[in-house]
Amino acid sequence: MLPKENEIVEKIDTVPVTLKDISKSIFEGVSAKNILMHRLLIPEEGGSESYYLCEGLCKPVFLEPEIIYPYISGAFSEKFAVHPSPYRFMLPCKLSDGIQKKEYKIIPTEELKFKFPRAYRRIMEFKNQFLHDACPLNSADYSIKETEFLEHLYVPKIIAIGGYHLQATYDAVGNHVFRNGCGIVLKDSSKYPYVTCLTARSLDSFLLYVNLK
Image (cartoon, rainbow, N blue to C red; front, top):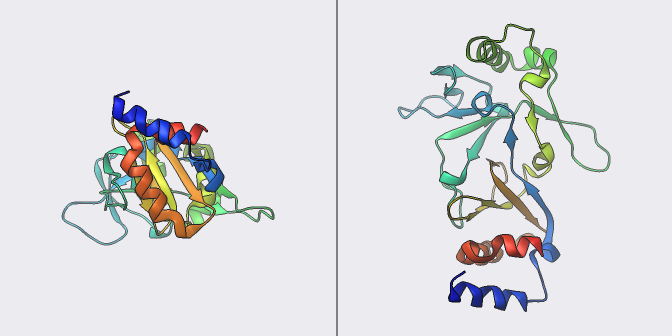
């Protein structure tokens, strides 16, 4: 590390309160089993909320907006705020009846076919034409890995996404899906702007260092 970076880390090391102390949860972003099946592109010419471009099928698709969420990756995260991204993410999941905490489960195939027929048809078409798989549809075909992040889908969070230069962004609304990074939910929601500011200003030097403490 550079001398200035060493100085920053040394100063942080003297701070008695760590990110772990003020965080309610630190969790991984989404890791899709098949990213092209879930990621969609908003057409440049615009259109209705249910009109997207499927990168795998290379054509427009119409989907139910109830299971479509804003999606950001390392290339589209910015400091202090979530900037508009040209991508959306399909999450065919539903909230389960968990007593202790919120739990999300993949929507079963028959329920998906009945409640979200457009998404069902697209998944079937994607599976048959892009994956060349003619077997009957199974929920495992469109499931996603590591669904812990769904517990915090609708709460404000700091999104730290890895890349050549790490970046932190503040998801004030709480409905953004992100990939290749970690989400940080604070115990005190009033501290989000302050912690995000500190994180973003010095992220290249010490974000992972603080997280590991």
